Length: 330
Ligand code: ADP
Ligand code: MG
Image 1 (cartoon, rainbow, N blue to C red):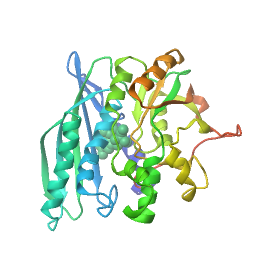
Image 2 (cartoon, rainbow, N blue to C red):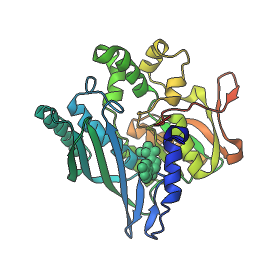
Image 3 (tube, rainbow, N blue to C red):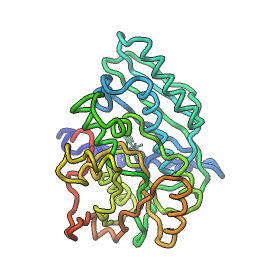
């Protein structure tokens, strides 16, 4: 049997069973956006993400400055999804011999800019020779005990919300793949190259105890919703015509897809927050959207697990999403 047959998520499930952890201080191990460790009144949050050249990025599209910032952002977004505060990070780099030193200095300038903006300090890492550029960051953060949000926790009857707009980054990537950096519009390309982690919004959602579960959207709405549903042991329905789309997305998507919603449903790297909350918090959530100036859209409803996960089309017909989004090895 080969890896391609079980895919990335099948592999993670096997590792999770094989390595089952037993430490009583471990509040959350494998299976969420970050690991959560009990420190008394506080919790320690730990997450790691890898970026590999020609899998996650292409040097002809992304300059080293933006790459540095983005490497940090993908990790910050996982802390955001718990409602936590990022604090320290380590970075390990695999680098080819012929890499210009100017690449590394620009990369670290981008990293420093991101670190300054989100108040995190670099505290170490590792460096090795490699054929392709490999970037691995491990980010540590903290949260208040009882205020952290997990993928598990969604309850039947909850509403499903998403921040921002979806599909912009994936459409930006398609434009880059077809037309390179000369492609248009730059607004969509930038969403792919320079995503923004929703740290403050995540903290507000968790801090006000508005939500029951939360995840960040890195692999695509359908896949990441599925992760939240599986961990919470519930089902859901999502109304396709409620998916928030930006004006740029609506204007340009038709050159890349016949279906208006497909890229928004399956495309990754928006780094928006997806969360569930009981209907009585709707008003507070609208107030939060207004004060944070980030749109928050009610896109679906949590149902019993036996109802599965279904997408309702505008014409009222529904379907169960099959080819859902990005998964490594598939
Ligand atoms: P995210 O997209 O939020 O970064 P992933 O889908 O990468 O989350 O990971 C899901 C869970 O699986 C996380 O708890 C992560 O730490 C864990 N995980 C991923 N890869 C491995 C691995 N090779 N070994 C152990 N745990 C892993
Ligand atoms: Mg995540």
